[in-house]
Image 1 (cartoon, helix red, strand yellow):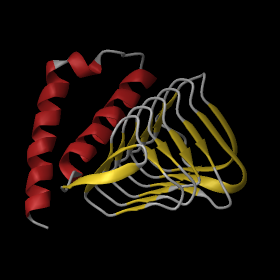
Image 2 (tube, rainbow, N blue to C red; image 1 turned 135 degrees about the vertical axis):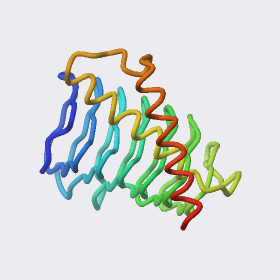
Image 3 (tube, rainbow, N blue to C red; image 1 turned 180 degrees about the horizontal axis):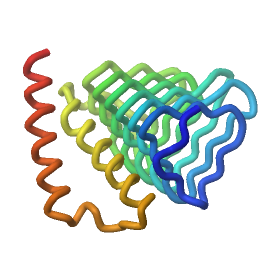
Length: 182
């Protein structure tokens, strides 16, 4: 298991949790895997006050995902390059396809399957649009990767630095070219 690039002292992790390269874990996160396991993919960020738990099976979160503030992920699978909005809940057996966005305050019901490149919203969550969110979601994950590195060095203001803004603008260009070439 990799160590997170940054983990807040207030984060609590219990059980079998597999963390990949470049992961950041923010304040007051709780992850529990009393049976089965939790997998966190590379360059994913788990933001403040998020709860991740297992169900009958594992909870799997892909690479370059942003699990934003106050989310609950319970026994679900989230594909690569996803953004789970503030205060969203993803329930047992739900599957979120790659490059998707779950809007804030949404509830994805047990066993729901969200196709790749979707935007879902509501309670219960329903697909409201189909769009490849790869660039925006990957940029968000990379911003948190940079922020995690900065926090590990005591820099809590990296996002305000001109160099960081230029780096993100260049990344956007590169990711758009990558997407266009697929």
